[in-house]
Image 1 (cartoon, rainbow, N blue to C red):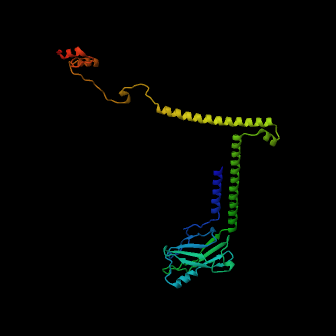
Image 2 (tube, rainbow, N blue to C red):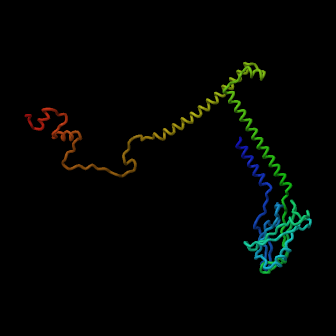
Image 3 (spheres, one colour):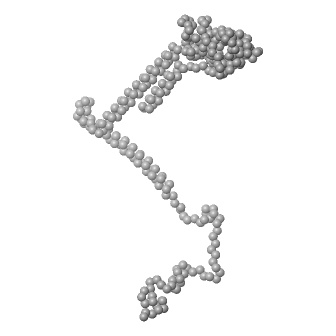
Length: 316
């Protein structure tokens, strides 16, 4: 149960961390079309996105042509073509940044630090519209030709914070609950083990519970029999499993052939043929051995005179 509680708490923590996060999609194109080929290829966030982060509100726009101005004058004129407004028409100051690494990329960021006016601050759960003027120039002098807009809605931070706090409380409550539950189970287990070792004093138990000593003794005896029965069943189950494993190993290691079989039974086509010399008699092994021993100078089991007679000599 402790492991399950830890897993639940980790999952709740992950949800709490990810709940307030909301990122805009990248590389989604708008439908700006111009006869000169100067168009908006993509924007991030795309038009109509909801849940945009309030902090560091910015829009990344990729155009079909190189946008780095060749003069400071063109840079200043282009900055005037970007306007960010809220649903009430309040204008939010912006800054325009050009990318030296990616051709046609411009970042338009809300400049909330340069103004102390609350109406010029980015708010949560608010609709904002970024407009791009028709006189926006590319590096080659081509103009956009028509006004384009990108709308977005910021994240409701109050609701997000409330959800985050609720999840945090649930997570903390879950951790406390599982911790207390685990502690109680451990304490109960230790108490039961202690009672099993030391036993129960029937007189103290009777005095504490208000029951007779006989009832307490019978109850404890019943509990003891149940524990012993459970232990016996568990022991028998373990022994049965062990015996089954041993028997299986024995059967696997003691495989024998039922009866001898000829070579042909295994599918072999090898044939053996015994060839003897013509006219010669094949003697039995014992007869051949006796015949061989007959001519030896030192026959087996010969002693004394018999041994000298075999040599053909006389003792002088």
